[in-house]
Length: 150
Image 1 (tube, rainbow, N blue to C red):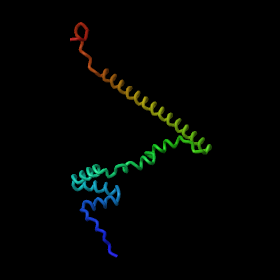
Image 2: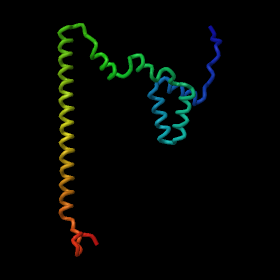
Image 3: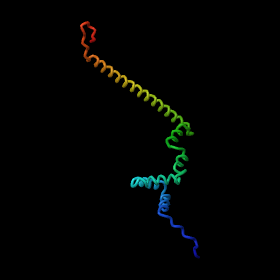
Image 4: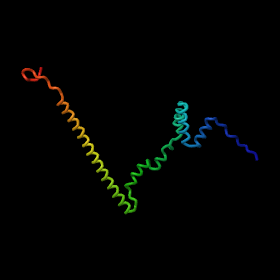
């Protein structure tokens, strides 16, 4: 049996490089871009333009974060208020959150008192320095009539 299929057209080295980078994934494109900037900045810039122009990552770049509900921290914060279905755990969680909120308020009020005390100390030091400067300032010589002016 003879195979009458035509051989695939030979791609240029740029096409083969593109295929190779695609097979390696997004990390390979990023590495190529970084290396392009390191060795010869116009190459890195050309890769950025090429990736942007061909929409190489369109829909893929942020797909994972959108499909998984966004940032892990945001998901964690939203799940903290959702009931788990276990009433004992939910009561424990509510009590722990209430206690943490009280501790946070107490700490914030402590910091406020600390700032106020520091402000008062700095103001008192300023007033003391000003009073010392006023006491040590030379007095104006008095005139014959005792008015103190020239």
